[in-house]
Image: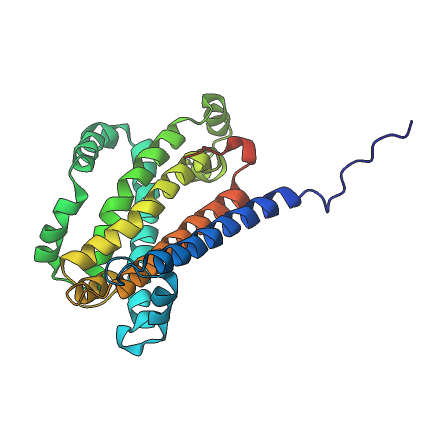
Length: 265
């Protein structure tokens, strides 16, 4: 009886590719059903436009899709990047200083309980409005999940490894780079995935409250004219920006964290 042939390297990627192909097919099918349902029911465009009418707005220059999308992208990605840098840096400081943790960490927990949307008008009063202010609003939403998960990850490192580095007279920075950071990456990426979702909300909330450009601002402008297709198109572009950020985080996690060490969220 012939032995079963082992899987060839070409066979292994078929699973993930098939999964992504199914996801794409489901989305395309949903759009087709949406189009057919609107045409069959003859709903007015201001209530529920067909996908064809929504995508047709991309050809109209008065919406300035490119420039408004670029502004919102800066707010989402800028605020997110700053939150990752600030969250990891502060988590490291808390790990290095027990006194700082005792004094400041409870304060940050309290600040995390404040509804971030309520801070939006205050931030605008303090810093006026614009891209920089909306980046701060995005930062305020994304910062705490990254801080809290990173602190937990840094504390979950094996004590024996830390003792080994100390016995070898390694510096705090070397301990962080070679021991703590690799061990905390699953927790860090768990917080980053949550923050990626919040980043989109932060940028749009800032544009809703007070802004003169961006996709959120455009939605407010076309709402008065009941231009529902343009509103849907703005929502789709905002969603695509969020999906792109989330996929980027997943890619980095795939490259930097072992599969069995990843934390699902």
